[in-house]
Image (cartoon, rainbow, N blue to C red; front, side):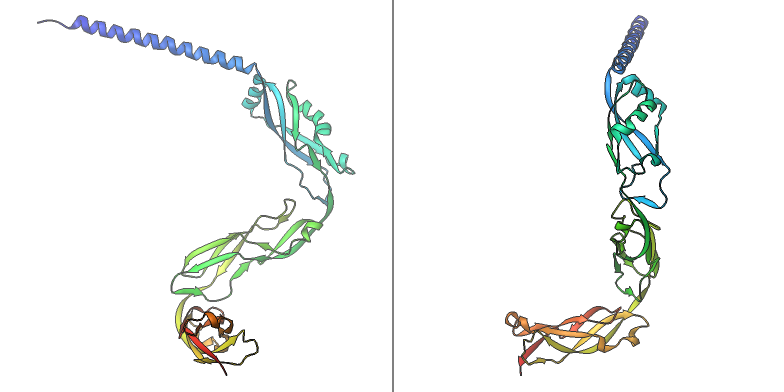
Length: 322
């Protein structure tokens, strides 16, 4: 019998040598990366730092037409070491601006008035290249607040056999806005965000957001309102409505038939409160030339609140000059 032990020893020796070579290669690669990073950190780079602006002694009876910026972007030139140190420390510099110094100024030029103070706060090896915004406008107006109505921008799609049974209620239905008086006076109402609600089959209250203020210097006392939507099961009802002719141009027309049967749906419990006189059915005499076989389409142009899904019989009528 031939032994394979020498062959096994040779295989193990090859594996050990490979592991040793990979280990040496990995350490060399790591050392090369470290040297590359250290070399890179000695280079000079452009970077943008965020400096938080804090304002003191702001006039209480006045408001700025252009909101004072909360953050100032400072482009600096610095070595990789300085930028890396700033990143490691995760420090966010703050800049205190005393507004009493600018009580009679129309603006602050950042590059000249704020630059020196920033130089003292930033690492001494950092060179400030630019500041954004480069100008802080200080237009001031008297502060004003007033209430304006809310306009609901809501599309409600009820389930097949359900409908809105009463007035939709908003809470609140007014919003108080505050800001510079010239801007506040321009605002006549505030709209809700465009909202669609599908498959509604019961009364429910929804929270709907208001649209953002049209100017950043305006604020509102609420950003959300509650909208209560009363929904009830629908029942079918029927009535006969007289047909009127429009666009007669001084002519006297006769319409046949004179009435149309209107089948509609109404919230359960309201069917006995519907008045037939609130329905208005018409045919348009100006479309006589394009009418098929002289038949004009009957249209319902007015109907009582909370009536839905109209079916007309007949759907067309014929007119003739008397």
